[in-house]
Every structure is written in C-alpha cells, then in structure tokens.
Image (tube, rainbow, N blue to C red):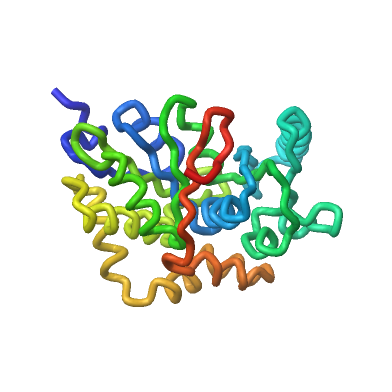
Length: 264
C-alpha cells in the first residue's frame, strides 16, 4: 500500500518546505524548489549572468546571535574552499561586496564565476535534497522555461514524477509560515507543466494550480503579500517588482554535481 504522504500515482506533486522536500525526494525523479522572495528569483538573475550559485543555509532572523555568528564563519569557510565569492546581507552591501540575496543587487553587481548565496528558506530546500536528486530552481520569472525543460526530459509523469516544493517563510518560533508568493510561484509551474501535457496532478498540486490560475493580478498579490510588504518596508521595493516579472527569463537553473546551480 502506498504511503499516505507520498501523493503516489501522480506525475506532478506539491509540498511545502524542507520537510516536504525531504519526504518526496525519494519518491520522485526531480524536485523543483520555489522561493519567490527571494532565493530562486535571485538564482535566476545570477545564473542568467553566467554565475554559478552555491546555496548555503542561513539561520532566520529570529535565530540566536551565536547561531548567526557561527553560520557566518561557516559560510566564509565554504566560500574559500569553493573558490567563490560570498554574498552578504542586503543591508551590508559595499563596493567591495556588492552581492546579496537581493535580485536588484545581483542585476548590477559585477560578474563572478562562483557565488555562495546564503538563504534561510530556499537554500534549506537544497540542503534537504540529496545530491543524487535532480533539483531545479523555479520562480515566476522562468515559468515556461522550467516547464519546457522538465517536459522535454520526460519529467512529470507517474513513471518520472516531479515534486514542486514551495519554500515558505519562518515564524519567529522557527515553524513554517506558508507564503502566498511561493504558493503562486509553485502553482504557476504546475499550471505550465499541466498545459504542456504533464500529469496527472495530485490534489495538492491541483489546489496550488487553482490558486495561481484564480489570481487575476499576480504582481499585485506578490506586492501585497506579507513577504512583499516586509521587503518593501525594508527599502527593497525593486526586489518585489523583479520577483513578479512573469516569464521574463529563459534560464533554467539546475543543481550540478558540485552543488552549484548553473544553466541547465
């Protein structure tokens, strides 16, 4: 008997957060991670410039200072060992360190061959996905490109299922906060996959698809979401606008053997 939580029999599945990614990783042929504000949007911008992006899990804002300090040291070590530059906090960019999780910053920052990109949500999906599992970074900017890449390789069938994972955010206690923008981004990918003949959908995937297709103003919803308001209130209105650029990008970031996202 199939496990109740595997969404068995469907070609397209949907789940939330690192726990969902970890659960479905062994059940599917490919995982698609969606973190619209801002990890996978930032990855799409960086990879579009030819930068190979190495995800690095970062503690959320409510984490103890000692944990954040330890993560900063570990990220610096990882960047040195990987021959990469290290992205900094959005508020800490300087001419010497112009790379951050901000898509707007990455658009204007100089090219580097490899970039370690810390993130508390999107990078946690990568950390929860075993190295041998195909992992694709999707956002609202590359919907059709991701759908075409997956279907052209035979993904999205009961024999080679795809799981679309909405990263979500975190509450102050560390619990998963389902994020509207990630539900819409995941639903967009699922909608495109289905339109290209993939399926069938699990009921979870169908619900995400319906959320996207039933939202008349995607850009407005992203901007007015809790995450969008938080970023805009912190001075990063442009990041929210870039994240809502539907189908503006043809790059499909795919994790390769050394753990970096590069153009697939």
